[in-house]
Length: 276
Image 1: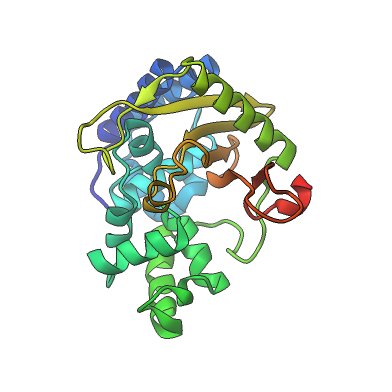
Image 2 (image 1 turned 30 degrees about the vertical axis):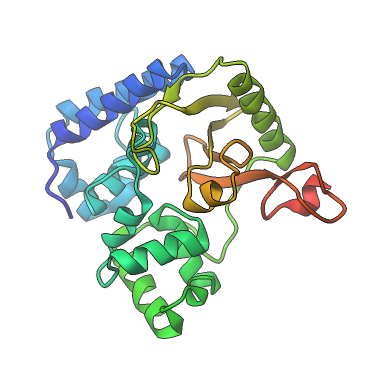
């Protein structure tokens, strides 16, 4: 458990609210983080103690703190970072995220990121349980189990087991946000951030969209992975991050299919059958 006091957590929530406002997100979402920051700042008990005792469920019981923000606070306390905030800043480095796992050094972190194209600890936990992590060069079953155990200790989330599917937006909804994002990006209608990775000039080139579809909060960004740069897909592959107020964030990537019956069409990776 990292020793973050309540004011430090409140400051992070306020920073995220400010970034969302600058990036033209829904004002209700902006205000939700600001209300949560006020609750955290004045709470008499250190949230670190509450989270250690009751987990995300205890945090969720606080006024104005829904499940999604409770999980974000728990992530800060468990890992010392908040990936959603780092993404909006443009400073997210998945390889550094993975190096926070005991036994994962820089080279293995790089191989994990390049082979699996994931960026978060929950996604890596899922990959450890569904067998994908074992396929990364240098991992294998034994090391995958060790990484899964370390992640379980770090995350300590009381939510569905990684084998259980979590709710996602309909593929049609994701494709609609993809269309909106690419259209507005092409017309220069979106704010841009300066990603730290693969951007030595620190140019603000990466358009960002925050969209609301029913209960879903969705953030869209062109892919800034090594693979996307290698294949020249940084203006084609769109990564969509989504969550409701009642659950953790997840992601899908939308691409232009290059072969098969869906060739030339936009598809959600992993959900091609729905896109058909």
